[in-house]
Length: 102
Figure 1: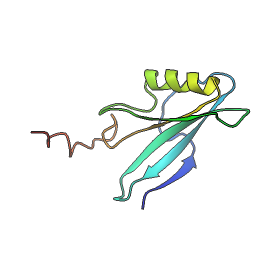
Figure 2 (figure 1 turned 90 degrees about the vertical axis):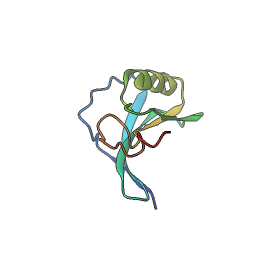
Figure 3 (figure 1 turned 180 degrees about the vertical axis):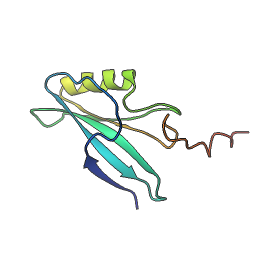
């Protein structure tokens, strides 16, 4: 069973967050025991209108400039955005599936 919990920021990443937006960080554990993390941007003073989920490609990161730019903008407009680091994000070292493509 996969699990998650809200935690303090897990990586030493500096992200700029505009006024009116809050960012919370999550620790994720997959059903097979792989540890990863995510970030959740939300409007600070109200419930979000919509929620968006971002999953980057290989070697990406939830704190990449384009991810934070879009997520900050969505949070500023009253929406929530979650960006998840996958098994192949830049710091993971997980490469098992990279060589399975024929």
